Length: 629
Image 1 (cartoon, rainbow, N blue to C red):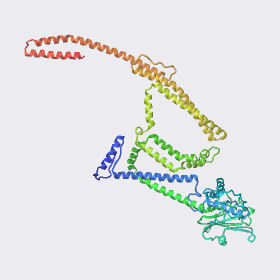
Image 2 (cartoon, rainbow, N blue to C red):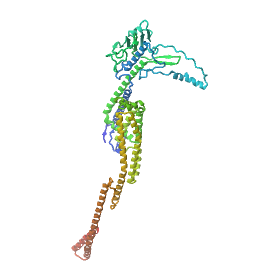
Image 3 (cartoon, one colour):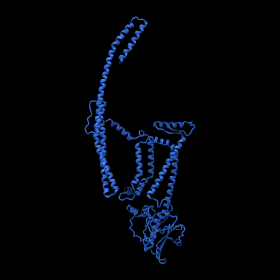
Image 4 (cartoon, helix red, strand yellow):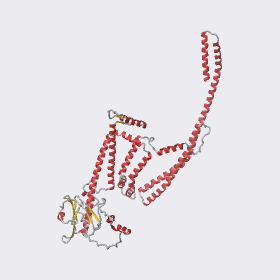
């Protein structure tokens, strides 16, 4: 028992001695060594344990959140870029606006939706919120009116003729959003059509000097110029557009400007700090939300905040683990105390908790069809994507439910700590108790019956497994036939090898039935020899695997029989020898005793009387020895 006294103060109440005595008693009963600590030592131990708990929980939480965000690609830009106007999503949105403005300038039609617009965070499009559902919720709309007509609370009204919609300007969808100021001119300066969402201040827009706007784009004479914070940006690079080009705009050598854009000029400015813009249609009750750039900026801001938060959590976790490393040796008493609690948890409850945590952690990912598809088809099958895509699918599956992963980790730690400090025979298990009871009952049966029952059970399980494997084998064969590929054929070959092993195991189980009978006969023969039956030998068939063992047992039986006969003969001779010697000694000894008795009855001198007495005593002693023999 290790001792570590951290204080020499007296404990007048005796509580400390009682606490130490209890710890020592538990350690002695469990057959383990334990560190007996004073309250100051327990404070250090608890501090170390809490530091480890907090550090690992924060680290797993932060790493899981980071892995989940990376796996699902929720960031609009690389994770090291915090300027929202430097993100790929911003460039895609600006390119989208430019394409729409060029379409308007060329006299084309831009498709846009009425309703509520909001940024969906994953693609450069707006999502429409149906206004009929909103109006129905407030008691208006066709569905609500039809319900009231059926209930008899409203007279049916014949449908009115549809009102003729007012013709909208091509840029009507962009006029309300002041996060983007634009100027579109179609044709010559005098006769061309101009579209803009600015009532005044066009000169400032054309001069790139609007307050609060730092990003400007101009399309003039078939070329795009971009200015940010007063600095011109390179748009076309080497002049050819490829996958690494930053801007997807017309004007490249391999993306020329169409003749339809001749004379079209577009100028647009983006607010440095976007704000949301709303509009309401009081005739229909709809509300529109024009804030694509605002949502993008907020998303980049949220992404930056997310990574700062996770970095702070990792920093705190690192220092907690450093503190735990310094106090690691002091934490052992806490682990032992926890093990003294967990030993009372039944093994079946542990398995149920582990299964529940596994389902909680991985079932949501397995129910996600996208994750399952990537796991099955990302690497090698059907010319799949790549190993990186498969790894991302695995990362999505693992980080789908981070709290469940943390619970699974701590459950594993508790079980590991319990197995470290508590031997197997101390742990409680309902199944182990049941199996021991059944095993005790089974040992009372003959060996042949026990072996026959176990062999039959194994054979039945193997037959059931072989029957159940036929259907997956057929499905796999059909899959390889319809989707040929190297990985499919490798998997089919592996399945065939498993089937061959299963058939071989069936043959071995059937062959073991004869071996079980031979073992049972051999065990019965051993019991007979132990009971003293040395006459009846064990005869097994010539092809039996235990034939030589049975012959060896017969030889041992014959040798024991010969040795027993020799021992019996020696015992008989010894008894006869002792009997003869005893008889030969008793005759003269009887005479000596008689004469000694006669001499003691005579009147002899004192010396002679003493001699006669000594002779009588020695003779009596010799008589006793002969009788003992």
